[in-house]
View 1: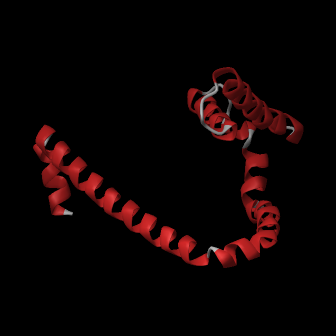
View 2 (view 1 turned 30 degrees about the vertical axis):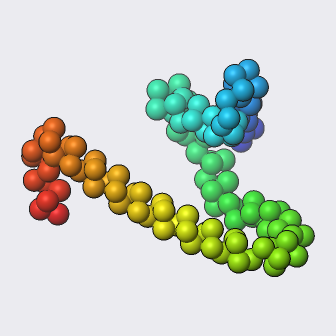
View 3 (view 1 turned 180 degrees about the vertical axis):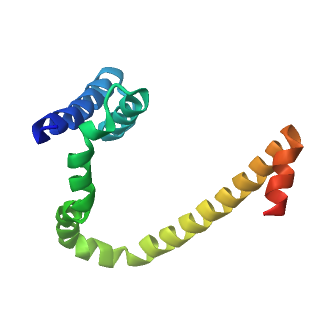
Length: 128
């Protein structure tokens, strides 16, 4: 498929996501809505995988290139980062610990709930 058609499909999904956010004022980034729409269209078979594969492979292969502008922009704020270094580091560590604890707790709770619903599932996980 022509690269411009692939680009049109991907940008069309992004534009649909942008329109949806504009219309509904949901607090979700339009790019995420567009990605979900593209995923839905792929799952339903409306868009075939080979319709976007060449461009998406190119974008994934060059993903690091897209992080250069934010990295360069970050250099403008070194003075702010230096001034607030301790709060930044503490918040990163505390939030990481909170996420780890909550993830472990929710996994444990899910296993208990699934074990009550279907004892075979509990036995399966217990053996692992």
